[in-house]
Amino acid sequence: MNSPYPSTLLENAVNEFARLPGIGRKSALRLVLHLLRQEEENVTRFTESVLRLKQEVKYCACCHNISDTDLCGICADKTRDNSVICVVENIKEVMAIEKTVQFNGLYHVLGGIISPIDGIGPSNLEIASLEERVKAGGIREVILALSATMEGDTTNFYIFRKLQHYPVKVSIIARGVSIGDEIEYADEVTLGRSILNRTPFDESYKLLSR
Image (cartoon, rainbow, N blue to C red; front, side, top):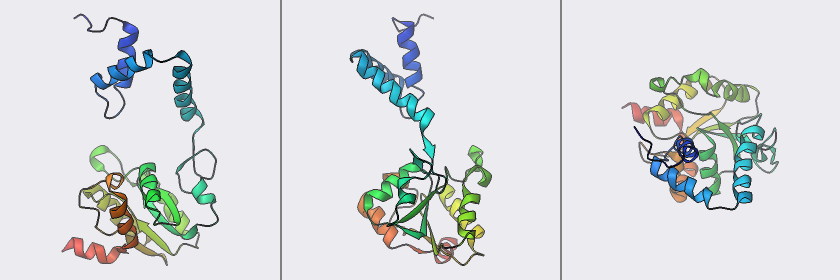
């Protein structure tokens, strides 16, 4: 079968762009043709920034957030409340919560949520390191800010069971974020109120279990 592309180089580039999440082949072709119309220095700057991202990006030694240094800017900020940890799935949730300007504690990025169907278990996530942070002392509250999905609730419950033996308050963001919603897509007002109106996890779990 003949290829619909007039150039193998063009087809290869489209194939690579189409690997990106949410990018179909039509969108990939549009992006590639856009790059072809750009000055070479612009394309070089684009490709170098992506390559440097892959080669040089770090993960915070404390919270596992993406960072340029060993300790991210949030963990290094002495003005933040280091006795409160907000547990999130990934960097997108950190960015979403920071935009609300309603939280002044630290974060803990799990790197995903428990999803057996996808082969993701507790050992694949940064749950053990979260327990170590709590075990080390100085933490008075852990806020579970995971998406209101079945996988998110499963992860919430697993973390709660891991931490319930420590002298730390475990709370969950208010369900102003609708069931089934992803945190990153919640509007800033709703997400901010959910953080402020968080409830103890054990009380929330009792309601969900009825």
